[in-house]
Structures are given as C-alpha cells and as structure tokens.
Image (tube, rainbow, N blue to C red; front, side, top):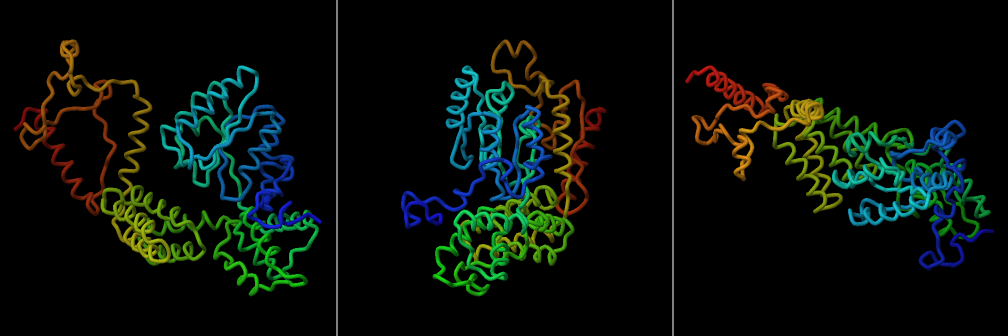
Length: 439
C-alpha cells in the first residue's frame, strides 16, 4: 500500500509530496475533464498530430490542469520546458529566459515557456513576448483565470490560440478520487452523502478535491467512516452555493454585471451575496465592478469609478467580513448610477482609427520646436495658446491633416454627461463661428 505521506510520516518533512502532485498525469490521455482538448479528437491532440503546435493561451478556473497539460505538451513535442509565474517575475527574468532560449535554438532545440497568471503582466511585459514568439525562439503557453479578451494585449492574442479549460464536473472529480484510492490502495472513508459533499466542496477544482481527500485520510481514525456532518466539522468548509463545473462562476458574474447595467440594485445585491457566500475571490468581484464603472457608467457619473476602486482598497484594508460591506455599497451605487457606454464605444472607435491611420504625423502647428531646424520646418507655426484666447478656446484642429476632424465621443444627455454634452455643443459652436470669421 502506498504511503499517504510518501517516504516521511509527517507532511511538513522534506520527503512529503501532496497527493495532487504525486497523481499528476504522465500522458495527455490521462488528463481528466478536458477531453475536448486532450481526448482522441481534442484540439491539442490534433495539433500534436499535425506537427503545427504554436503559442497558446490556456484560459480556465484553477485546478483544471493547465500547468500539467503544458508540461505534458512539452514532452509530447520534444520542447525544452521553462516555467515562471507572472506574480513573482519581471522583465529581468524574461530576458534571462529569452537569452537561454536563443542559445538553445542555435543548438537546434526549441523552448516552451509556460507563464502562469500571464494576465498579471503589464502591457510592456506582454509586448516583450512578441519578437521571440515571431522568430520562433519560444513557444509561449500562457495560463490565465481571467478572460483573455479583457486582460491580454490584442497583439499577443493575435499570435496565440486561446484554449478554454473547463471546471471539472462531478464525474471528473469522482474519477480523480477513484484514481487516488487505487494509488493508495485504500477507500476514502466517507459515506455516499459525505463523498458527494466533498466533491461539491472542491468546486470544480481537481487539485482541491485531492487535497480535501488527503485531509480526510490524514484525520480519520481506524475503521471510522465520516458522515456529512463529520466531514464538514473536520474540514471546516461547506459546499459552495454555485458549481463552477456548471459554469456558475462565469454565469453569476455575468448576471451581476447585467443587473448593474440594468440599474437593478436588488438583483445586483442578490448575485453579489451569492458569490460572496460561495467564497468567490473578492478581488475578482471588485475588478469586475471597476470594469462596470468604466464600461457601463463612464462619465455619466465619474464618481462611480472612484467608488469601485475605493471598495477594492477598503476590502484590502479590512478583509472579511467587514470589507464585504464596501463591495455591497459599491455594487448598489453602480446599479443606481446613470448609465452610459459613450466612452467605451468612443474608445473602440478611436482604437480602430489609430490602427487605420497609425502612420500619420500630428499637424506641425501643435508640435514643439526645440531646435532651429525644427522651427525652420514649420514646427509650432500658427499654434494658438488656448489660455490666451477668448473663452480659453482656440478652436484649432488637432488631428493629422490627412484625416480631418473625426468624432468618436457622443455623450448622451443623462447624468453628468448632460453637462459634458452642453460643453461640447458650446465649443463646437465657437469653433464654427471662428472658422467662418464670426465673433
């Protein structure tokens, strides 16, 4: 019979390895719950067969096998495996790995770089991957629990395939428990209802279900079988209110977002309470509320963004449960605020224009002329200092000359944007008057 704690009797001793680590699959076909990727007709299986493996982004909840699959993928494709975490690494670490990968490449060996929590890297750090991805120095495999569309640069996403990892359902978690029982050659001492509860406690996380099972084996006395009540008492944990295996994690945050957007504070509080009660990551909720403040409220109530940020800071300062009230306060404020996506749509329009006209220079009259040569070239000629003009408004054009004026931002007459709309109308009238020679 395999020793639960490996070669040493105590988990804290050097020979101890967690059960989840000792049960890591040795081949892609052994990965549980991701058959759409690793099964016979799975995406990764087909990529390996075709010999066309490129850079990848693994998106999914914790404990679904992202790290394991990356390691096995490197083995299957004969790539040198390097791993780092975006939480603990910076540009210096990346440069070292890139240099090592370049040396390997000259010796005919390609490096797979696995980056956990890749969404934690900032824009500049994400951009640093682009050259080494393009020239084949590395095959990047990034893992993230956040939506890549929101958290990763478009340039990075355009060079990688996004593969979605699913939360493990009850059947997959049961398979892991059976595998653990076979490995240890002993049954999990739980009655059927307690076993079902333990699977629920894992919340779709394969690593968690093995860790919980290990805790049961560690605490049970000889001949004892735990009931539901005993299991809950021993583990001091209860089954979640929603099941990530059924996409509850994503469904509830989506429901919260839409309730806030729909200006329904009661429904918003309900979904927030469900997520908090289920143990959802408070930072994840706060980050999404900050997004709501920018995307759905914007300048209709500029205070919304400050309140959402303040709620996150308050949670960090107070912790649970006191800090959760700040999240509830922000949630209600956002739901009751006037709504506008004018900045959101303006930003997307401006980004399209920037990509289409990104090679155009700003007009010379708004560029500084720090040298005589630049002055001779007309830099700064004709620039009017707005503060010296009537109404502190010159009405000049600032777009590249080849583009002409463009309009992206169209504030609705709601909330504070009603005042912004009036200002823009006032300035537009001044601009027309001055361009036509009026007073």
